[in-house]
Length: 104
Image 1 (cartoon, rainbow, N blue to C red):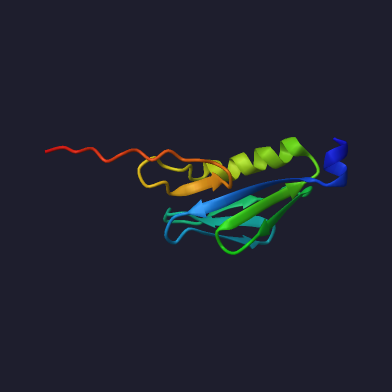
Image 2 (tube, rainbow, N blue to C red; image 1 turned 60 degrees about the vertical axis):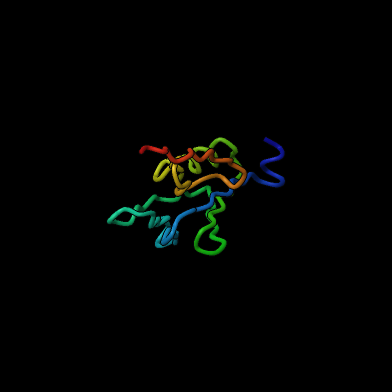
């Protein structure tokens, strides 16, 4: 808890996919991740969401559990899929890609 007050906690998420991008509008995190409409997630008051470019989201706050819960909520919008690896993933996450089947 002391570490959270001094330095804070952060989770970094990356959007991987063509046309995937994020923006912030009126305390809402807007995600364009391949759906026909924009997914809007309200940002909690005690968290700070920083966009580094259009494809990197940094969730920052003092409470480690709340930072992790919001980052998990963002990731649930579009989890990384196993065939091309597109989706929202944590920065240090390794996504195993399945090999294409060779049907003849």
